[in-house]
Length: 146
Image (tube, rainbow, N blue to C red; front, top):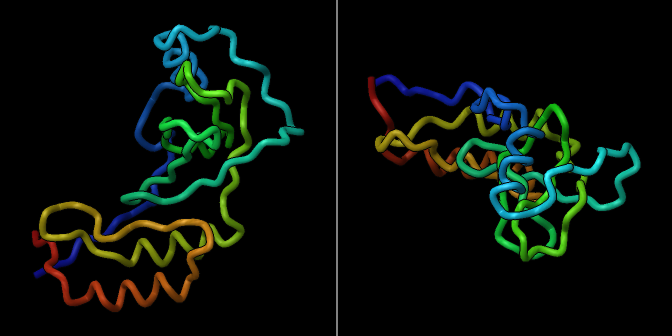
């Protein structure tokens, strides 16, 4: 039995060829919002934290709505596309200071027998030790085989 492992924790640019600004603009148009996205400022005051869900960096709208997208490593900004949301401007995405260490720990995890990534999840505040402990527990779960 050979274990297959994730090779990268994915961001938007890994999966989609379309520039994220074009993607966001198309979502806003579809929702009936203005088509001109505000200019990205280096002094954005509002922030939202990226987290890892099934091996993907994700960002949720801090406005309390249900909008969420894969985080962009290139732009590191988010803008909500839901019309009912109060957040209409760009919001800076915060990645954790220990991003590389977190990704290294999660990349050690094999695929589950179903083909899904095995617990490749992380949330702000979760420790590296917790990720290591989860990996130890997952050693007893079924694996994908070649």
